[in-house]
Length: 109
Figure 1: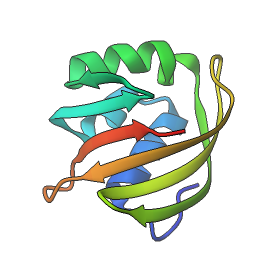
Figure 2: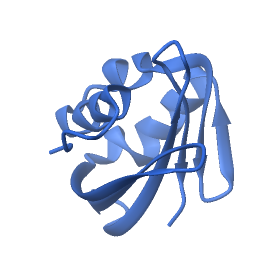
Figure 3: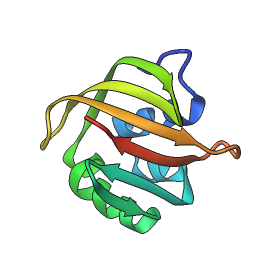
Figure 4: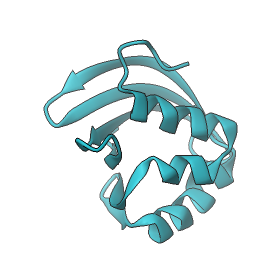
């Protein structure tokens, strides 16, 4: 469950993942938003959907938020991930534009 200090666009993205709702997840990103999965970059909704279908929502991922903090350039969320693929701790760093849309989601650990 996202915490009260988390920026609303970040909380909505986490909620969308946990609900298995790809459209809601992608709808939180700017059209030219990007996902950086440990150096593999997916830019734009079509590329992000393909990645999510394989490795996030398509892998029945669940996020259990264990912490979060403001960091230079965004908001970092510590997450215990369970899925049909990766399972374990990960740190996600989100950047939010002034329009309230996510610009990026970087999987940093």
